[in-house]
Amino acid sequence: MTLDRILRATRWAVAVAAAAQAQAAPVQDFGEPNLARLAARFSLQGDGQPPVRIVQFGDSHTAADYFSGELRARLQARFGDAGIGWLPPLNVPGQRNALAYVRSEGWGLRNSRRDDEADYPLGGFIGVAQRASAQVRVQPRAADGELWRVRVWLRQSGEGQALAVDDGGGVRRLQAAAGAGWQRVEMKLKLPFTLSAATFPAPELGGYELERLAPGVLLDSVGSNGAELALWRRWGGSWGRQLGERDADLVILAYGTNEAFDAKLDLAEYRATLQGAIGLVRGQLPQAAILLLGAPDSARRQGPVSQECPAPRRPLMLSAVQQVQRQLAHDNHLLYWDWEQAMGGPCSMRVWQRQQLGRPDMVHFTAPGYQRLGDDLYAGLMQRLAR
Image (cartoon, rainbow, N blue to C red; front, side, top):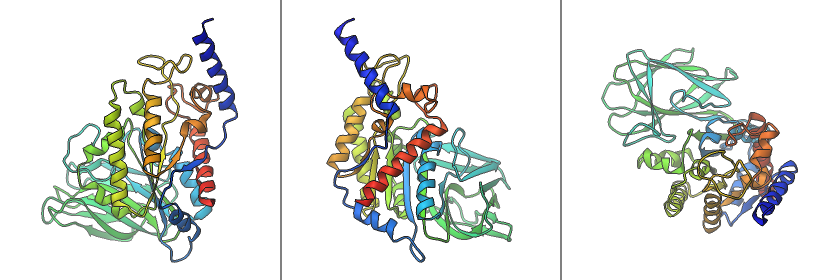
């Protein structure tokens, strides 16, 4: 056996042992200036206090809302349930929200991953009515009969356009100013509720924000299958204003998996993209802490790979992407969570897959795997806040 094979076999044995004994990775603090404020926001939750708002951006790991959903569930169990948070305007095939779903008839979805549009709203999805009386129903998975604070993002091209809103207590008319771009219209409704195209054309839908009239925690799961962080560029230049109006206390950036599989990834461009995203969040939400998640370990059987692990090997650019993420977290004084460390280190996805915590594609996780990761991130965050 050659020295190279011996070293790789040793590295694999270490990875197996580490993955089997993996414990919650700490949330590192590289000098986040808003950490004390975030800790105070959690500790002061009670009557009369606005909810702690968290926005998690990411790829398919976020879009499935198992990982972010577990973090949300743990935080709400401890600090109070302030509601569902952000939802896309229509159902996005292959994606889910753990607390609610959207069903529609007669509406079409524009997705920023495939459709050109100069001005996407936050999240990168637009609902467009295809006919008069087209309907959208926003349905919680557990109805409670209470009034909710509902904010609907609308874009209206002409005067007189309107949607009809029905929550079982009577029909109301929903409108925005014509030609003014994306606007947030707020009302108090019971869930579920239905939106119908009262006119055709009707106002376009950009998403919903659903909050209880109570203190606690909200976690927006803003994900898109197959996304890289560069997707933000396709959303246009005005969606950042929506992010600012969300008034979040913590923003989680959870990209990197798809960049790692891009063998032609320009690292300098990726660094600039990530730096730009951090700057956008700081500019729109100067009071918010930022938590950057390092890309998780993954593996592939074919295609460009590194030689760091035995077959199946690591994606070619994974280590480089992780290094850029950690360095920019350090340079920008962010919070940082090493997702790969939480799994047990490099080469650990194969072990997770064998333990039925990772899926057969060795990229995604099973529901129990995402739950374990969400629990680990929660534990790391609580430990950091306690300090």
